[in-house]
Image: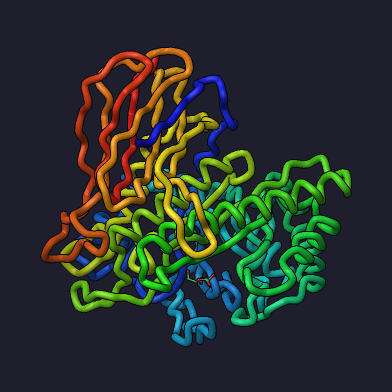
Length: 487
Ligand code: AHR
């Protein structure tokens, strides 16, 4: 038997909805054939895929990171603005392909505006210069009569784009990156890039690379140098991770919650310690600006290959979102990598698109999470695997919308058995009925395909209850969002 005990007064803080952000890179068919596909029957007059936009709207992403990723470390933003016929094709050394530059800054901003999402641009801190970075900020956000602002106006954009979020480089800690940097080199670069970018527009928020290469022995030093040298400029430190079911063992896969907790706690501790020691008063938050499951199993979708997301992958995505919620004081942005076709909840083909299992999980959180995150207590059945003993079978997080009187408890049942869970309020009452939004399937390896697209979706059921205590049936290997009206 499992129980979840909730004191509605015990809040962890306000939820920053940027936690439900996305990421779009010039990689494979994310931009071309995903977002931008002029030859598609679904394209609008700008070449944007309306079916993709409609699906993305359901995910209510408040922010999308662009244009990379590894791609950005060799990208010249100037190539992607102005008349399309004049844009140069360039070698892309990140992914060993040719970039046509038919989609660039202004197309991306238009796409974001259609979605009602904030653009988050990453500048090239690989083979790019400080000058290019500051020019890009000026081109996008400038208001004075400079050559770059006139250029933007000539390109059809009279008003500044007001791009608020700017990243300095991508995964510079990885030897795989064009322009890999040592901790010292990167801290210097951020200090100088950030300084001039904020001189151009003091209202922007800067995101510096924290860690993506978790096996390297220098991520503490990287964070330390960045905060020692550039704490007056940085608003977020970025961490990245991708996980996989390496051993093909369900229990081991479900124990990845411990890795997420370990990494977030360690990085929070690092920031807190440095802020204390260096007397840094400005808020500096964590942006998990690339995260997801990434394995190599693929399926054919309309003649293209796409990474498969099974039910068990969807549960791991849910555990990552639960971890972000539990660390909501510090995790103020997270960007699922990516949004379409590449490691994605949405896969396009000529006639339409396929929604993968992770789409339904992401949609459940993004649409149901309330503005306050609760600090909750839960206990019950446990499992053990490798170094981990006594892991609770349930993985839980909760939010509250005090105005609506709506409590939402996100529960991942990591057991292959159905279980009943007692949800009890320390004070107050649950007013019936309780709605259960459940994502599951008969087998953990199930996934959606073009011929069976609705094997995994969200099912909504109702449980009749009243009082401070409710028994909630949880299906085997499932995510359940328990939506309660509380009094
Ligand atoms: O999302 C795919 C790639 O993964 C990104 O380009 C890079 O930043 C990461 O290693």
